[in-house]
Image 1: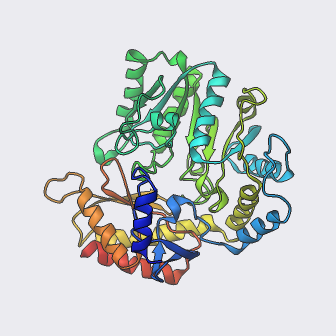
Image 2 (image 1 turned 60 degrees about the horizontal axis):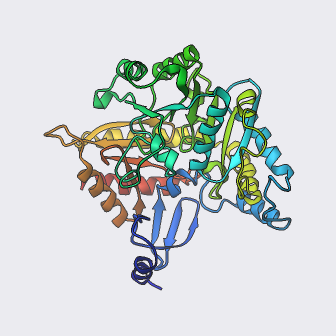
Length: 421
């Protein structure tokens, strides 16, 4: 079957609402490379949207899944439990920021993790309201969409959304939003829209993913923590895209002198297997009663086995350190390109979670068209890139942290040509 033949079958069999970026179909993949059904090779700087931090088909992860396959594939943890779930919870409790007592529950998708974090926060506080931020992305479920701070394409035609969700602007110096303005906007919410005594939680991404890899300033993170403490509000760190080495630390919150009450995680947690989790303070996590949390596939044993292997790989291959090295290499490459590419407005990020934002050099306004041109040119030469940002004018880089030096150098050469051409 050719790519075009598969596309015709796809168009006839699947709805247009499942948007597909690429016009080719995957046949196999290895580490940071993948091949389509016609044999063309691509360098994968998308990683299944930040899922493959440990690369495609890492042998340690494959071996762990195969070993679990020999025992059982599913029992439903809430019916017949298994020790690997408990072992993974213990490791996550130990590895997440803070020395306080913690507990972890596992689910299947990132959106499920967010939904359950909100449930837990409401159960623990007895309050209904949630504050999120513009540019944030928290999933495609009804609550996930309500929390997400971007309308097109995620919210179009899907309302009404759950009530008692409020948004404040996220600090972004390039777009003229200061820390002070962001915090003042929350105070205005308290004055005009919601009593802080009704707010259960404030949820935020340490580095906004879909929002354009905008990094939360340390002073902002501290101010949010202080505000939460002042009003008895829980702080939820959404680490679904930032976790498991992407920012140069296992979790992005380790870059801050701030500890959240709850953390959500997914994506690279299980190296391509569907698994998510919520970790938090013991007394908060224990607020829901028995049966209040869970799901038929929540904490699937194959995915749990993969996650235990992922943690081993991150440690044994020093992927946190590798993320910093690769991020530095990419940042230097992009900064050098700024001299020749006036469309580059900013290069930003933490560790390997790097993005480049494009503005038109004459108008100074966000230029999504230029970002699309760079993306298309790179794809022609076999480099897969993702755009993001409120205006769609940002390219984010999500290569596997296991990428070889040779493949990385090849990708940067393609990127350089795409930027300049």
